[in-house]
Structures are given as C-alpha cells and as structure tokens.
Image (cartoon, rainbow, N blue to C red; front, side, top):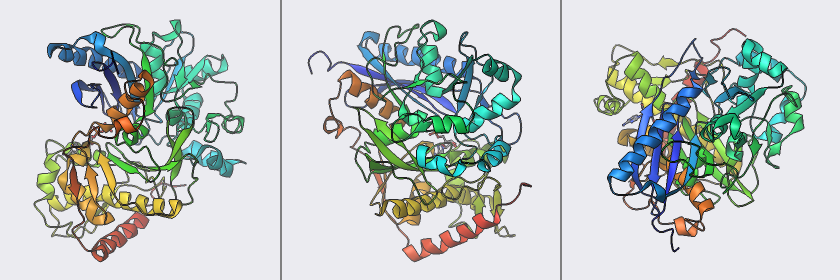
Length: 510
Ligand code: ADP
C-alpha cells in the first residue's frame, strides 16, 4: 500500500484502573506507549466512581507522553494517521448537553448501588422481555440502572433531566465528545459494542428501541449518542488539541470486544478470556445474536463493514481485583505479581475455597446478594492457601462460564485465548488449563485490548484491508498451557466450588 507502509495507528485504552496510549505499526507491534493510573473513588461499600475529567486528562497525558517517546526513537507525529478508542464498558457518565460539564462522578461498572432500583424494575411489567431485545438481563451492571440511580438521587442530574439537558454516555462517548472539543464540535456518538451495554439498544437492529427506553422511563427525556459502526472514517471526528491535533478517530470498541478483535477472534467459534480487574470471556457466535438460556449475555463483538458480528459473553466481577484485595486490604504482598510466589509456597488450596463475591456474583450465577466468603479454613491454613484460592476463584468462574457457553452454542471450545494483567501469572494460567481441561493460549504481546481498537481504526484507514492481512499479527512467541491433571480431579474441585457459591448468598436483607 504505497504511502501507508510507514503509517502508525494510535490506540487509547481507557481501562478501569489505568489509561494507556499505544502506537502500533502495521505489524501490530506497539512501538511506543504510556500508562497512568487514576483515582479510584469508593464513597460507600459497593460504590465505585471515577472523576470524568480525570479520565480525559489521563488520556491527554498518555497521548502527549507516548508521542514524545515515539519521536525520541526517530518517528514523526505526522505518521500517526488514525486513532482507535477502547474503554471500560457500562461505566456511566452524565453531563450537561449545553456546557459539556459532568454532573456527577462516573459510576463504574462494578458499582452495585442500584440494587433497590433493580429489584423494583424486575417487578415491572415487561421486565422479562428485555433480554430478548437487548441481550442483557436486568442487574446493577448495565448503564441504564446507574443512570436511573443518578436521576433519582443527584439533584443536579435531576435538574438537567427536567430541563432536557441531560447527556448520557458510556466512557467512549464521553472521551470522543471531549477529545473533539466538547459542546463546540458536539460529536456525540457511540459504537454498537458499547451501546449494547446500556440496555437501550436493540441487538438485532443496532438502534435504540422505544420499548426499552419506555421501560426505563427515559424516552425523549435524555440525549443519547448516535450509534455508528465500530470502524468508521468520519463519525468519530478529530482530536481538537494537543500533540495529535487534527488526527482522526476512526475506531471504537468496548474493551472486551476490543480484546476479542485483538486476539483475532473474527470468526464464529473463537473465544478469549481477559483477566483484568474483572474477567471477561467472549465467544464469537457469528452474524446472529444468541440469547442465552444459561446465564450469559448476548452482545455485539464488532461492526466493521455493515454487518454486525455477535458474541456470547460471560463476565466475572472480581478477577485481578481479588489479587489487589490481598495486596491492599490484607497486605499479604507488595505487588500483584508477588501473589504467584506466595501461592507457590503451597501444593494446593489446602481445602480453601474463596468465593470472591465482593460485588455479588456475575455470570453464570447472577447472585446480587452474594458476599465474599472463604470456606474451609482450619489451623492448617496458610497465607499461601488464601493466595492460591484467590487465583482459583477466577478460574472456577471461567470454567462455569465455559460450561454455559457449551450448552448455549451447542459445541465445545478447543482452546482458550487469554490476556489481561492476571494472565501474566503462569500459575493462574496453569490452574485454568487444569480446571477447563483444554489448552490455554497466551500471546506474547498482551496488549490485545489496545490492539483491537488499533485494528478497528486501521481497517477504516485502509492500513489493513481485511482479516486475512491481519492473520500473522501477534502470532509468534506465545505460550501454551496444557492441562496437567485428570478431568476427574478438576470435576471434584469444581464441585466443591459450586457448593461454596451456594453458601455465599443471602447476606443482604430483601
Ligand atoms: P484493567 O484493564 O481492568 O485495569 P489490567 O488488565 O491492567 O486491568 O489488569 C490488572 C489486574 O491484573 C490487577 O488487578 C492486578 O492485580 C492483576 N495482575 C497484574 N499482574 C499480575 C500478576 N503477575 N499475577 C497476578 N495478577 C496480576
């Protein structure tokens, strides 16, 4: 492709605990990057917030710093031709549609404060039909219930709502809006992978559905972003200021869809699991959505050139955040990676099962009132057993989700592709292979979430023309973890986990 061989694509990866900006070449290799962490705000138990303005400034800092590094190694900023965005999903930002000022902290996807609202909504007529339309069951997780909580409890939000000035967005919409310069440019869009997490979008048409908007009582009352394809040359506008002023944004994917794309899960039957703060398994089901009968979500994998591709999704609320809990709350070690050394001091979990249900349990259980609980403690129990049980908790839930996917899709997976912070743990990945009895594949370059958004932007740009051209990207040098225990042993361990799950629920008065 003359003129484009020296082109690069930037990728904004706005995650739950940190923001990154990576610059990829045409071989899908990151040549420069920068990462910053930002404040996690926990005002009450079960509540979790981010400052929307800090999210934007973290993106700006990462862009500035990464581009500086990029230039230091001899490249020019002009060779960055397009930008993709990937972001934490469901996290809800509300702002004044006229001034662009945020009206409250963003409510993060893990936040469970909308429990009472969810219980009330579940008893409303039509509640049972929602999942057929939008792919998600009612829970504290999607953006809709977080929005309703703010309308009900935050006077500034209610005022904007009453005046018709309430703009609602997921983090992608917010970033695109602000990076374009806010109200002056008023670029207010979202892609189907993000919009499918709000409960407002019809999964089949990729448009907002009046039945959904009516159910939540927001039809005609809030400003919603226009839904445009995940890969799009025009709709996402341009960066309005800073070191990359004028560079177009051409790709947008919710983080989990982006990781599936980054793992090149383009075709039906391919799956990936990302072990980040939470843990997310996505399974490509092709051009028709599959509505789960086994506690999974139906979502959009990506929409590149017209036709959407769908996925079945299983999410685990606590993945790496279980590691962080041992690190920060229990001071068992100083850095996340140290959990592995501690867990390796013991042969097995010593009979300990840790149900890490800090925010209830997500797929496939969906138990809102489960609480974190450790079972099987005796005088024999050491710190190492707790560390091991923490890693195992994520792996057990992954197994439960894979079982559900097998039932919904009618066939078994042959391999699981993995990424995310916790996939750095060889021990956790070996435990995972042992529990699911299939090989676990971990690519060498694990910034697959960022790579996915770069691919979305690069496809719109024409840097890559099709999936075939992407085939060899990030293939060399990966690791494969083969199952090393007999399936009967895994089944025995899993049965104990299932028992512990049943015992962890019912801690909140109904
Ligand atoms: P997010 O994108 O959700 O912010 P990341 O993919 O960056 O998350 O993953 C961060 C999580 O991974 C943290 O919770 C951290 O504790 C965990 N983690 C990072 N490295 C390791 C490791 N070597 N072993 C186990 N857990 C790890």
